Length: 302
Ligand SMILES: [Fe+2]
Image 1 (cartoon, rainbow, N blue to C red):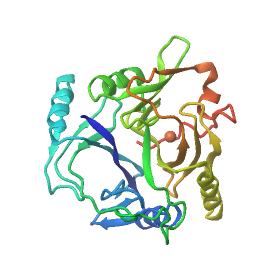
Image 2: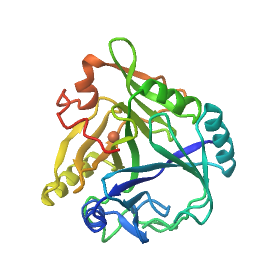
Image 3: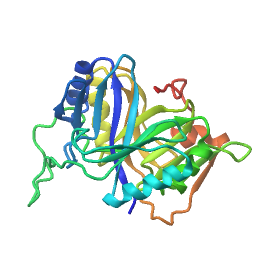
């Protein structure tokens, strides 16, 4: 019961055609639908209607993060829990949003708009449901099988983490503490992966990056080839995170939103004891090989 996984990330772009070209040709997502102001995209192994919505707007930014809940009744329970915490909740009716049914939205203590939805339109994966081939022909670019996680920024990581844990049921897999023992960043999961959602100290409401899942390190290497071939600005990597133990590349879409490809890590059970990193090890915590953060690390959009 409760939150299953990340459903979709909605980002604001100032050039819908440029962004769509990048996310279909370089990332290799599939366009499932478009309307007057948005393009809806999915990865080839995702059954749902979309995992990324590009919304046209005058300034690049973060519109919302949407998570899927396991049961329809979870929406009522989580709506009550968020309201009890003191945050107003809006209901979005079936038919109001493309590719999904009724949902609830609210602003979180970390300043992002969060949506919870159960009813998602399933359009199907690119593989057969019976006797599927592991190989899918005709994919372009990096072609990640699915979206993985989102990392957002906020001023009070400790307070926000408490909300995500106690109200929404997230489990904290890792935390980065400053010298006074305060949480500077946290990594939380609902899907038995190292993280579905992570928070790092910064502006309230910011998006640091969203990440695509890759199946192995070889796919990370091939992604670096695709990025270099297409002249994409790589931020960091290929490298490894100390936190999550994942292999990674950070890079920017043509409008400046940070993307990540991610693989590896561990598989936490619900009783996974939280791992702690201390701030004097922040470099290795984030980029294990470099042992240092670059100057762009805190570039975010709100
Ligand atoms: Fe990440």
